[in-house]
Image (cartoon, protein in one colour):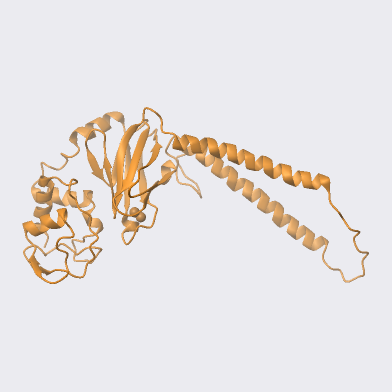
Length: 314
Ligand code: CUA
C-alpha cells in the first residue's frame, strides 16, 4: 500500500489500490515511451528528408517491407493483450464481492448520502467501517443519478434511481478518506461530499452501540446544533443570514414568512416540523421545491432538538 500519493493518484488505502496503481502507471509510462518514439521519428525524418534545393535522384518505388509490417503488428498486439488480461483480472476483482462481505445500504439524494448498517444504525455523509473487513455497498438514489467515489480506495460507481448498483472495498488500515459525488446532480453537487471513517473492529462495535444515541444527553438546542451538521442541514441552510439553496434559519422563528403560491405562515414548531417531514407542503416564496423529506431519517426526539436549535438562532 502506498500512503504518500503521487502526481496522478492520492494515497492508496484499499486492498485493490496497489494493483490498480501498477496497471495505471504501466499505461502512463508505456504512453510516454511511445510518445517519445513518435516525436523522435518526426524530428529525425523532418531533418533527414527535408528539401535541400538540389536536384536529387527520385526514390525508386517501394512496395512494402515485410519485416517492418510484422513488427508493427506484433508489438502493439502483445502490448494490448497484456493490458487486456491485466485489466480484466483487476476488473473482476473489483466487481466480484467476497462472500463474507458485510453489506451496507447506500442512498444518494440531492444532496447528501445516507448509510444504513446491517445492525440497524444509520449515518449521514459519514460511512463508518471496520478495518480489514470486506464491505459491500448496495446503492440506489431517491432522485437523480449520483456517483459514489472514494479516490483513496480507487472505487467509483454510479448510483441510480429505480435500480441497485453494487461495489465493494476492503480497507486494511485505520484512517479517514474523502467521499465525493462525481456525477453532476444539480445545484448542490459540489457540496455532496462526505467521508469514510475506517476504525478498528472493536471501535466499530462500540460505535454501533452508541450510534443514534450520540448527543442525546445534551440539552435539546445543543443536540439540535450537532444534528444540524451531522444530518447535513447546513449544506442548504445558513445560520448566518446567507441565502443558500434554502432560506437562512437564524432569526426566523416566530416570524411570518411569505409562501410560494401566495399566503403566509408563521414559523412555529408545527411549521418547522412540517417543513422537515413534508418539505413541499409550504415553501417559502422565492425558493425551489428541492428539499428531500427526512421522514424515516430523523426520530421525533431529533426533530424536537432541531426545532429547539432553530428557536435559539438569533
Ligand atoms: Cu450527487 Cu453530484
